Image (cartoon, rainbow, N blue to C red; front, side, top):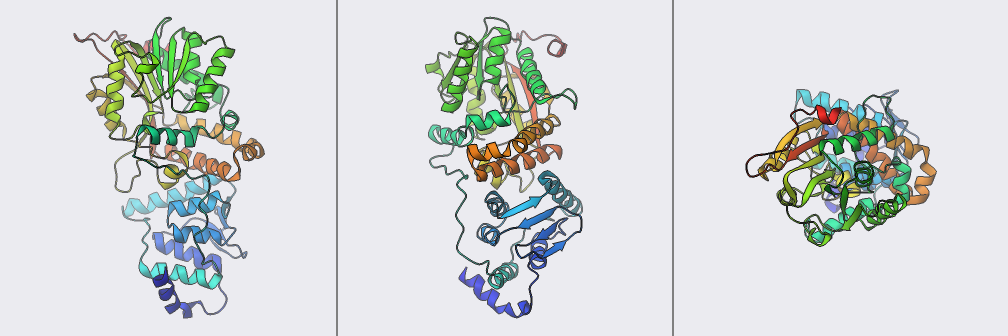
Length: 453
């Protein structure tokens, strides 16, 4: 930092006279990313610059610049937004969409375009502007909403802490955000008019039919969340379900609902890692059907082999598995398997998303036969739009439950996450596989019409 200040002082003469803070900041940002940004920027002094009529990015406090200087890039911007020092007037998703559109256009002509380049001269200019405006200062406090994980990656203890960071936030908050099924995954929207609750029930029923559930079967729900599938399968298909979660709050929530519905003899939730289910009464070759809905992303890359091998071991011959999982669109340089610094720091630490083809390969390598793959990418933005409406409609309650910082984390997460699916940077798919018998018998129906009837 001292070297940067010295360089900035050498450039100080260019700052003589009044400073249009917004104009200086926007010019510096555009030169850094090599892109004309489709935004209007307003600084804390009221100065403005940029495109008339474009989404307005507001720097409310000098501490926003400090966050970005100390943590250049997405994480610093996210920290400034979460703490309210930086904001967007109007529709946040629209603002993010316009920026991504400009990035795509630039990269169509040059794949290396719109990637930050923090050259020494640019750093010096940034520090000089911060000195001139009084924005220079100590590193601002890191938002309390950030995860602080320790220990070996994907150890049982760290996995439990990662899940707790996200899912033990507040059951009341998730009840506000989700629908009555408490399904925290993409719904199945048959039409644009399908409500959130209808889409979630349709998704749950589709999973049960793909798995061929019948009364008396033994089912395993790995990553059972707040029990949407666990309770639905037990209540509507008469199966005995063992749910698996690392979240104590989720386990207690599901068991309470199971008791209220008289399902306690058909539902059990085990607070265990998926590798340690022997103590939950799960025997090798003793499970008829397994579902894992948007849990595989949390397993990690190297550990995914253990995940699929465990599924194969638990299933009986002829048993089916349905994995609904988010994916990255490709393996291009710069892609973030966890979704980027914001997602990895605030939402889902240690998450690892793979391209669909790689996931299918790992499932097949475990000895499971792939029988159906259904893309649901266009469904997720509809689900997220409903969650976003719920958050905005109950904003004051959300802030009271989790604090304004965390509420802003979720506003940014939902807006950015939805856009990633719309623009095909992320996908979500249902993958149906079966464990054939030693002689190749699958017990699968001749046509998938059975589960679409």
